[in-house]
Amino acid sequence: MYDYHVHTTFSDDASLEMEVAIKRAIQMGIKEIVFTDHAELSVWRPNGLIVDDLFDIPSYIEILYKYKEKYKDKISIKLGIEIGLQIEEKERINQLVNEYSFDFVIGSSHTIDKYDLYFRNLFENKTKEEAYERYFKEVRKIVEKIDSYNVYGHLDVVRRYAYTEYEDININNIEREMIEEILKIIIQKGKGIEVNTSGFRYGIKSTNPDIDILSLYKSLGGEIITVGSDAHKEEDIGYKILETYDLLRDIGYRYITTFEKMEPKFVRL
Image (cartoon, helix red, strand yellow):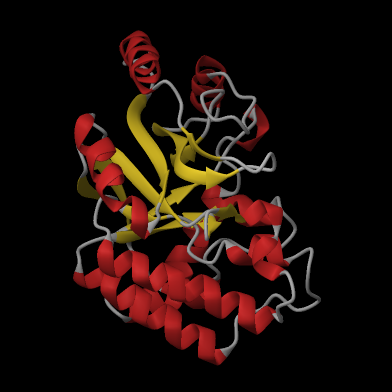
């Protein structure tokens, strides 16, 4: 088992100490864990300020490598980061990724017009269809313009937040056409997607992206795919990863992807 999306106390929304996560992963028989703490550039906060939400990356790396050495005979520990992708921050994102020797970078869309999806601004005075169109149009622009990532995180994460706003959070055919365009660009650029298991914890009863998008990605020739729990607490480590491996096998996937120094390696399911 490989958990490719774990947050620690270096992320301001997580309560998980890095060593606690490592010990839990070892207990669960996880072969490899990747820490992917949040980096968000130029985002709106409720106090009205636009700020960089960055953690102390040098300290993060120092601590991670200390534990990497300490537990090297028990588990593989990789250096990752989850970066919020915004077109207007492209150069700063490139600089951040190139400054450090990451093994793995998740690129995610957490904000629209600098507002975090968590605050639900996206849904104000919009139908579900209008909100989804706005979100996926932004994702398409991002994948066309930005290359400083390995996999796109929880591609349909908008459903996680729409869950509290609309009765029906399913993606319709028009939206799936937009998603197909996004996936084609991702594949053409040699990037991949993440299967994020946290949707089950957030009440949407599926992975992000959902099974239909995972099937579409496979049919388009997509091969690079990682699976992560998006853990923020100890009990989240490894969450539904084995079940997700079964789901991927059922769809027709034969491999998942791991990374070292940003280079993909394929591991048989």
